[in-house]
Structures are given as structure tokens and as C-alpha cells.
Length: 251
Image (cartoon, rainbow, N blue to C red; front, side, top):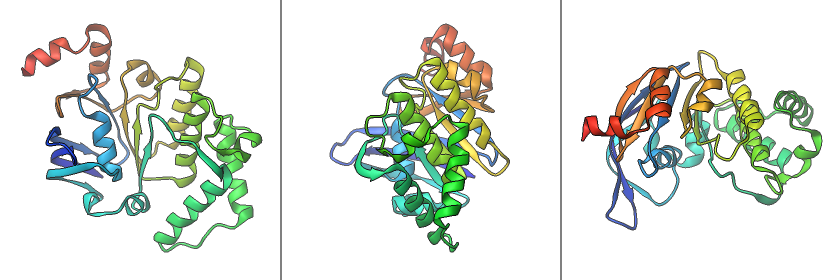
């Protein structure tokens, strides 16, 4: 589904490489986790996949279902099935949550040649998805993320994902700043969306999230590239021993 080959990236305004040859393949229906020290390039990779400004790809490719992601505008990537849940979701004053969700959903449906959903159909869909994430009606009426707690913002991101139903979901440190209960709610929302046609790339610092979202593969990233991969036991090793031994092996 998602294939990244020899991806090199630098900041546009600086001659400073960040990604230095990332290779990654995420199969349909699988969950991959990426861990690594601060500054290893994890978030940069998610930004580049989603089309964020400020980064220049100097070498390599990234495709989704065979389509060239790097040649698409951000909204085209979203319509193709890519979704990014941010580490720090932004507030959008003046834009209601429901308005935002319906506009996003219908824009994607239009791009895919599908009819728009009616107000009634949309309301039924959102209420159903929100209930499973313990999002109440008042939260849905508020402007996007305005005045939300950290946990509410992350649950709102998962609600967006549940409504839009992307094929490739990238979660950039979604567990950051969450307490145990909020983390479990977010993880339950992710797990409810897992199926054979949807894949996840979970970027995290903490093995504890992976207790709830059990990955098929764990990758360790350092100095702009993936240095080793393994099963869930690799995350347990990092939790116990840190990154020093793994970094020493590839030094």
C-alpha cells in the first residue's frame, strides 16, 4: 500500500538533510510502529507524506497504491486515502466541528466521484462514530479544537479519521500528553478501524501505546533512516534498555 524508497529530505531554507535514505513498505491491513530518539526524522517523514510546506525531497520516492504521493497536492493525497493525525492538533476558531467534518467528507467524496452525503445521513454517521469515542454533542457543536483538552483534541482527530475512513492512517505521536484513560480511548478508536483494507503507521516514543495498538512490525529510526525492524518485542527492548545498544550496532 505505502512504499517509501530511498527518501532523502531537507529543509527548504537550509542545506540540512533530515531524512537520509528512508526505506519502508506498509502492506494493506497492517499496523507498523516507528520509534526513535528525538530528532531522528519521524515527524518529518509524516509531514513529507502529507505534503506539508517547508521540506524539499532531494531523492527517492513515496507511493500510495502505486500513485506518486510526492507529485500530489495535500488535498489530493487526502482524497487518495492518506490521513495524518497531528501531534499537536491546531485550533480553528469560527469553524464548527460538524461543519468542518461534513465539508471534509463531501470534498473527498466529490474528488472520488461519489455523491455528497445529506445532512441527515451525516448527522447519523457522526453520532454513531462519536459515541464510541465518548465525544458528547456539546463537543461536536464547538469550533474545531478550540478550548479542547489534550485528550479531547486527540479524540477529535480519531473522530475525523473514523468519519473520513482513509486507507492509510499516519499517527504522529498521538499519545503525546495523554493520560492512561485518554490513551486507551484513542487506541480503542484506532483498533475499531483496523481492517484488511486499511493500514496504520504509528509514530510514538512510548511502548505503552503499543500495549493497546498492537503493531505487526516495529521500526527504529535514527539519524534520518530506519536502522532496524522487528516484531512487538523490539518495542519492549527499547522500553527496557533504551536506544544505546541499537545505535551502537549500526555506528
